[in-house]
Amino acid sequence: MDLIGYFIYSFVTLFIIVSPITGVITFITLTNGLTLNAKNVIAKKSVLLAFVIAMFFILTGNIILDILGISLDSLKVAGGLLLFTISFDMMHAKISRESITDKEIDASADREDLWIFPIAMPILTGPATITTAIILTETAEVVQEKLLVILATVLTYSIALVTFLFSRRIHKKMGYNGMLVLTRLFGLFLGAISVTMIASGIWGIYLSMIALPT
Image (tube, rainbow, N blue to C red):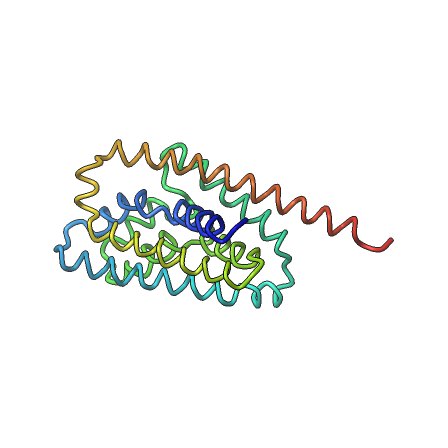
């Protein structure tokens, strides 16, 4: 895969998983009743924190895997299964249980630190995003590809910031039904990504097993 292709693959994968547009409904629900300035402050702080968390795991993912003794192929299988459950919820236009539950939304409505939980994590940077960021970085064969993963992450969260800053306008233009259609579409793509990830992980585990000395 050439560099441009790897960048497009990394960006599309991260963007679909972070899914800032489908997160608009939850963001509006959590910031309902706040002034425009207060909403924008929460948007900026939450996106910045989410980006920092993602970058932390991009830069330290290999160290974490080595410490825990987890192979990249095992992470692909586990991450793929997680993505598949999320995609299943998205295709049914449900809030993913990996991100946040209805009870957590209600409990977070009056909290001053809702920009930390649940907006920054896990809505914008949940286990699925962290897993995918590590996999993309660790499967990069050259330094340039690793840098492209970082660039894709910057672009993804830049779009997330713009999306949240104009969340009310976007919701008004697209409408609730439009958001649900987009959520289902993203869920379909995410399901395809998850299957590819699982297959790659299983194949890698198989190759490592047959390569073991008898």
